Length: 388
Length: 106
Image (cartoon, rainbow over all chains, first blue to last red; front, side, top):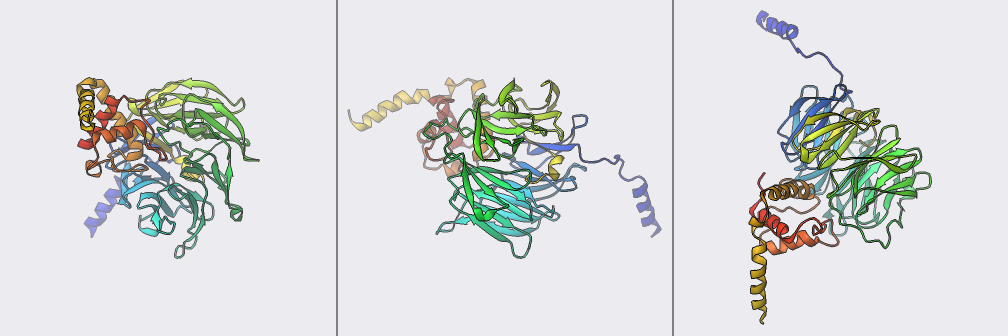
């Protein structure tokens, strides 16, 4: 007894040697080549740890627990990993499907949902234990074929919204009653939705279409109005360029009433007036845009590009609606993440095996961190934003 | 000339093109990176599939290197597979097809 007490006392006295720290300036980036993530901090711009053994991380993405201590990592191979970014260790991992594409965390932080290509559908897990809570196969048509699922986001009201690539549908999954999840389906929204986003207020869900022009808009405040098509005439009759990489819509770039989105198969960024949902402008850019992301204050929009132009970044001034700066960070610029208040931005430069940090006012490089084929970069500020 | 003779002749013309000696070591390195990282964006880093189908050897069984390189060069209209002809020569596409048939090791 006294021996146990002694041990406990020793453990308490000599216990964790690391100083207590918050997680608000932490984040991580994916290293595709080594199936790992590096944990970073944005106050001194350094790498502070690495977690390995995370499977196939092509197209991997991350959401954070509401306490911003845990990262849920969605891997290509169907792996769902729960990472403790304070302890720099893996705290749970399951293989939940054969092939997955992304995920989301519920409004209350208790549920994590994953969108799967194979078998097509969405699975919902307990965020603490990673136990399965709901399995939603994306069956469509008369044959009950399963569709690949894309564009999964959380929405207010303990909802998850996602789109069906093969079926051309948008589904709203309501998880507020855990025993009786309900689904509202919107069919015929357009061919091959490739990605989707939700506005920062959680009101509008917008899916980009690969198979035809325009985008599908769902007003979650007025679902009875159904899905409407916006920018329906964009690019009609024009020949698209080959698309070497699907654009992403994750970063909803908003400045005032204007939204900025990548045009599919064209060297243009589209500007949408969010009051009227009409096209407000087209901005010519260097290549086919992949990510079109607004600095948190909305004054700048940063754009990266598909092959063969993926060595370049362009910066758009959202007042002038014009490109004001061009950077060449190196080959394979895959992703960008702004620090929470936007004074610096992190870029992953895959083929150079570096993550680079730029000042967004001087456009000077501030720091560079060695990385093994880095891709997605995710900071904990996402923990408190709808749809991220 | 008979059809088979034409085929034989086109083979004679095509065959030297497909030799990997024509692609420098540096370029092979670039193509390998392209195959794993960029083709991998849709087909998976380990070619086990994603938005695009799996391209591991047993899934490609019965498909010739010529067929695979023609899909690489010209894409598949109506799907998300783009034509890579603007970025790859026929020799390079054939080299990549051979890599896929052998299995892309990491």
